[in-house]
Every structure is written in C-alpha cells, then in structure tokens.
Length: 475
View 1: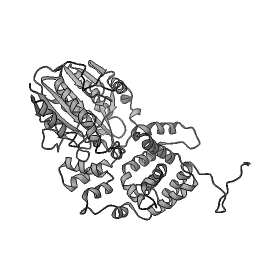
View 2 (view 1 turned 45 degrees about the vertical axis):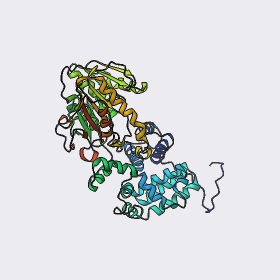
View 3 (view 1 turned 90 degrees about the vertical axis):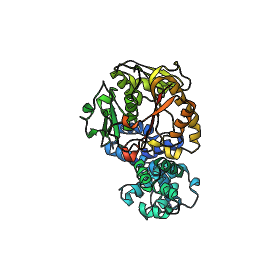
View 4 (view 1 turned 45 degrees about the horizontal axis):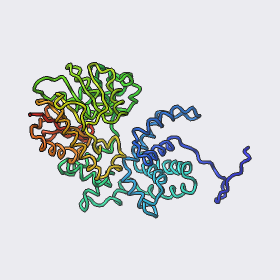
C-alpha cells in the first residue's frame, strides 16, 4: 500500500487519479500542435500515431484507435466554426477569454456529441476525464458543465439556434451551418457563379474526409499493379490514379515505398496530364516545372516526358523542398535535373523550354478537405501577399517557353483573385500569347465550365479545387 496521503475531496469521496485515454490524449496533443505551432494535422498526426503504435504498454494502440483519433482531430478542425458558435452560447464569458487548451477539449467534446455516434454519456465522461488529465480537476468541472449544456440538443437543433436565417443573411447562415469563414463562403460562391445548391454541395464536400489517391508513375508502375491492393479501385479521370476507398496506409504499399508510385490527388494529376496533352508547334524535348516542390507533379511530368524522350528540369526555390523533389524523381526512367532556384529569377535562358508548368503558391482554398485548419488560418489579406509572386511566376514562365510552346498556370485555389485575375493581368503585359482551350486536354472529365480555362471542384469531380489555364506563346 502506498504511503502517499490521499488528496482531500470536498465531496467526501476519496480522490481518484484520472485515467489516461490514449486516443483522446493524442487527439488533444495534435490539436494543440496545430494551434500553438501553426502545424498542419496531416503532418503532425502520422508521427504521433506511429509512436502510439510502437508503445509496448499493456493496452495496445490498434487500427481502430488510430481511426478514432484521426476522426476526432480532423472532425474537430473541420467543424471548429460551428462548434465555436455552439460553445459560445454555453459559456459565461467571451469565447476569446477561454484558455485555448480548454477550448480544444470543449471542441473535442462537442464533436463527439454533435458529430459522431458516440453515446452522450460516454462522450461527456471521456472528455471530462481527458480534461482532468490535461487541464486539472478545477477546469474539468467547467468542461463538464459546458458539455452537459451542449448535450441537451443535437446538431440540427443547435444550428436552428445559432445560425441566422438563410433569407436574412445567406453567407453567414452557410458559414455557421457548414463551418467555413464567411469570407471563404463568399469567395467560393463568386467562383461558382451563384446558386444556393452548388455552394452548399461544395461546402458539404469540403467537410467530407477525402479518399487516399495514388498515382502510378508511368514507366515505373501501373494502375493495374496498384489495383491489386485491398479496397483499391480505379481513379475517376486519370489513367494513372487508384483510390483507396477504405483509407489504408500508403506506406505499406511496395510501389509507394519504392517511389514507383505516390500519393497524389487526382486533380493534381490532371493538371500534369493536361499540360502534357497540349498540342505543340515544333520540337518537344525540354520541359520545365517552375514550382516543383514537393515533387508530386514533377514526378508525373518527368515520367510523361521520359515516354517522349524529353528532359525535365524541376526548379524549386526552397532547398529542403528541392530535396523532396529529388526524392520524388529518383528512379525516373528518363533524363531530369533538379535545381534550387527562384522561379522569378530564372537560372535558364529565355525561350529554353517547350512546355512549362507553374503550380504557384496560393491560399490553398481548394484543398480544405485535406487541410481543414487552413480555412481558419487564412485571411483575406493573404491574397495580396501572394498576388505579386503569382504574377511574377507566370510572367517568367511565359518568358521561359519558346514561341509555339505552352505554359500551364495552376493553383490549388478557386479564388478568382488567384486564378482568372492573375492570368488576365499577365496576358495584358505579354501580348504575344493565346489562351488554349484546356477542356479537350482532359477527355472524359465532365462539367469543366465555359473554358478556355478549367476549374475542378470537390463536389463535381471528387478532386481538390485545382485551377488550370493553358497558354501558348505566339511571338
């Protein structure tokens, strides 16, 4: 028997040491990393899960634990805006005055109560126990009181209470109901071109967990090889794509471990395929990826170039990202070179290339399914920060391609300020150019709009919201 005295308890009951729930503790740690370090969940969570699986304690952390942890983290981040609105009505102070760790625990509890099938009693008791472990008994009582208020209604009931009527304020209604910042709702709505049904479908798609999509790199692997994996089905549009419909661990697949295949959204694959399919006048020997990090598109482009006997130059400004590009291209069947260079100050002569791709840095509003925290991290002012770089990279790309060659301008954002506005501004400055109709370059892909550019959508194509404009240099 321990000689340590029991802690006093005002209720008269002996003190009980809180029990650590590894799933919820790990989910809390991931949320704190996202909040404190501006980390991304898709980078923070995998090493935490690996460490938990390697733990040789009495209670083994298994695949079901990993799945629940992932759901708690991503679900809480996706629905943060909605849960904040609910929590704000259940606390006695402004939400900004609640300590961030406490708010993370409350949000985890709110997601279990409103966004999962976990029974109410279990959701409350498990979250209060988490609060005792990571916050202490005093703040755990506060968490308990707030969660019991939240548990008095379901999500639909809460939305009726906290979301303004659609007829009075459509954008604010959609922002609360679908958990997106109001300015993002407005921007996406503008890009879609109006209509309630489309924006609601898009916002719902942003809150769905995306499938893992693989790419079989031509000359190194085939889609048929990847289809031999469990729960693997063909991609919707790319001939090189395979979807893992039940999640799965890509690192457990031999072709992925060997670098012959990779994880790559199908929209990203389509951008590379479209550039490779664009008709050329003259030779087709030198290709450039001017913003190559972290290397997914470069690896596919390099493989497609190799099939034609062309050489790829992959340029990336950040040296550590250039290293990732080199890793992705390692083993490419044709000639390639990776350099660390600023795409706005090219290390090559003008007119050196037949095909050029610039997938420019952007707000990433097209990948909110994969990086849900980005919606809360981005601000409207970020657009102004990216604008000069986006225009500079496109100008350099057009100067780098020879007459008769083609440039693909791509972003993982559908925001008009990052897509059509950039292309229009730069083409005014460089008149000897023509926009190529990109829609025929993606055969079989429906609902690509009026052209000549292409905007992909999660709710229409099951991809990230990639944008692509293809431009030919005419003089």
